[in-house]
Length: 342
Ligand SMILES: Nc1ncnc2c1ncn2[C@@H]1O[C@H](COP(=O)(O)OP(=O)(O)O)[C@@H](O)[C@H]1O
Ligand SMILES: [Mg+2]
Image 1 (cartoon, protein in one colour):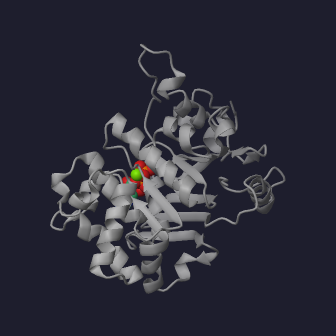
Image 2: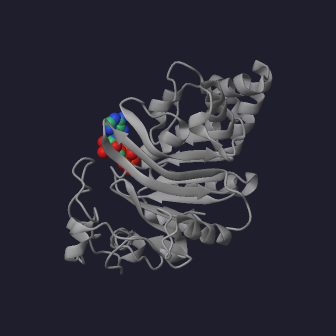
């Protein structure tokens, strides 16, 4: 389940969070991000971001480029460059454990075994001088102590599972011998090598053509269903989120502005930013006409206006939107922070 800054209609953060968690069922979340704030040399990058992901759940994190999605994900993985970036508030819990309090060695173990991550650019994440087989087998050997031979057998299984034909032969190949889609499948195989409980996919298909994109997403969705994997899917593609996610968090300029079920948050958005994003989905537009885009740009960190950060690009902004931060409202299916909701 998900919630933006968890502040209920009665003003109490816990009230809104509990209310919305109950809807997601009784499963305890694997990942809880609680009021996370990140800053770059004192300038806020991410402010007061909260969400949870439960086993078997796929949470979408959407927003235009520069909204803080990747730094949020990297913070969960403990992979932020600190300094210059610092956690200025909040915390990240994995199975109830505060990641900031874990020793480095335990964090490395979590990253290898419990949390898998797929990045946007498979070419920059794969090592060009090692074979596909050795790159998949390495985490298995390190974290599960399997022999080289057993780890390579598992690697072939994984390649089969992610849909690479002739998996045994693929083990001996190098990344440059694969297509973009094949490399992304290898990345997924590496992320899944030690059967993680949580998968973080940061724009996993942006570099791929549409057909391969659909195949990769179907693959991740299937793994989630078969293995009960909890999944955080980061993308700027709302169509994808609407299709495969259970819930969504919409981020704008470092903050969550709307969060809830797909039906509520994307089907009938209340925040004007979510509304504007939904209006840019190809399927919500008649074919043949140019897609609308949101005029203007996301304000960079350090230049975020007072009040609602979206006000300067919003067709429905009131005077108050430019001066006062909007309060949170929740209707059970979603929460949002907008002075003049759609
Ligand atoms: N390593 C870094 N050092 C300095 N600034 C960064 C770093 N990573 C991200 N940022 C800044 O943080 C903001 C959010 O970036 P990012 O999380 O990459 O956004 P998104 O993934 O939503 O496109 C951007 O303004 C970006 O320039
Ligand atoms: Mg990003």
